Image (cartoon, rainbow, N blue to C red; front, top):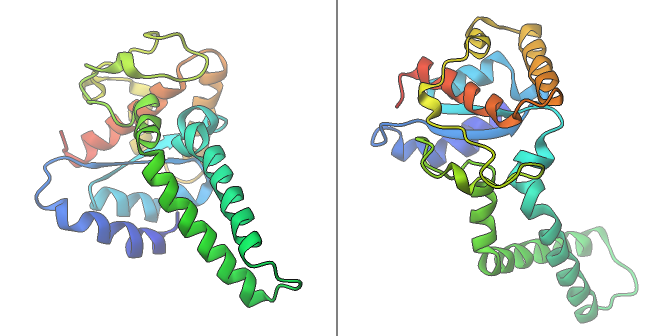
Length: 211
């Protein structure tokens, strides 16, 4: 995600509802350096978007694309690729032919995937806690690899008070990286990686005045 993508792709999607929605929008993404620039974080804050940073090494546990979607979607791509090759058995493929093929199989595979795997996509967000009430009333539905059912109880993250994470508002540049590294070390020591997500969200709620 870049500033250009945020301005040109994301904002047009949420802009019509910004004035009508009293709450902020939650945007979850990994800790790539270009996701954490001060300019981009400020754009998010101004647009009422809560950045939810997935700690390093946790995308396989907390990112819906990694936990549920990528693998089965690749299976759909392979199937559509095989069907296309059977239908158009060209001896040689030009660059233009390949572009047409890729466009066709991606669109066709995605349409089928969204139709046939709709419930799985929804569940992928529910399992990692991104599609549940913020008051914690359905925390029992969280299903993250390595945790027993019901083990993760987050509660209402709007009322969590964790000074270490609240210090995030004072950080810039390298300090942000140190914060993320420290959070990753806490995860390795057995702390719940998802607590980093909820605490980061709490900070941005407090900053934007959202509820």
